[in-house]
Image 1 (cartoon, chains in turn red, brown):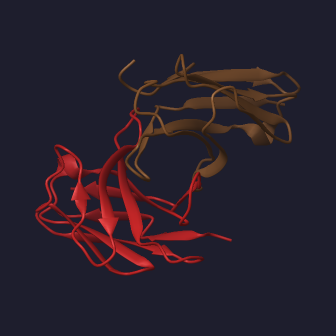
Image 2 (cartoon, rainbow over the protein chains, first blue to last red; image 1 turned 90 degrees about the vertical axis):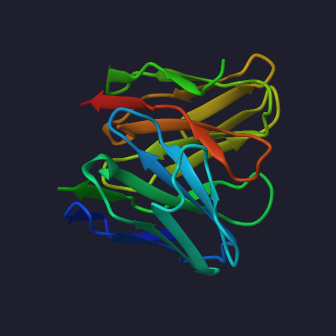
Length: 116
Length: 112
C-alpha cells in the first residue's frame, strides 16, 4: 500500500483563489518532507523542504509567500498555493524519507493543478 | 556537468530486448545516486540508492552501476517486458540531507 498519500490528485481553480494540497506519511513519522514541481517536459524541481515544527526552507526563486508550507505534525505537510495564477498550473508532488542513511524517497501520487 | 542529465529521452524496444540508460551527474558534492521507476498515474518507486564508486546493484532483471569519479550511472534492463514500460528517473543526492536533484527521465516503451 501507499507509504505517502497526497490529495487531491487534481484540482481546477479560478485565478486569484488559493489551493491547499495535503501530503501524509502513512507508515512512519517524517520530520522532513519535500515538495517538488514539474512543468511539462521538465524534471522534478525541488521547491521547498518542509520541517516539522519549524519554518520551511525554500529553494532559490520560489516565493515563500506564494507557496505556504505548514508541517504541523510528524505525518502531515500541506502546501497552499495562494492567489493562484495560470502560470502556477503545474504538477506538484511531495516526498518523505525514513530516518537513517541511504534511504529511498517515498512519493505521493502528485497533484495536477490547473488555474483558469 | 552542472545538472543531472539522462539519456536517451525516450526509448522504444521490443519485448525480450535488453536495454540501458545513462544518468550523468556532477561528481562534486556527491552523496548518493537514486533510481526511480515512475508508471503513469502512480507514484515514483525507488529502484536503487547507490553511494559507493564502483557499486553495482541488482533487483530481478534490473541492475545499475555507479561511477562517482566520472559522474555517471547506468541502468540495465534484461529481457524487457511490457510491464517495464515507465519513466525511469535518476536523482543525485548532495550533502544536504534529503534534497534530490532529478534528471528529466527516460521514457521506456516495451512493445509486445
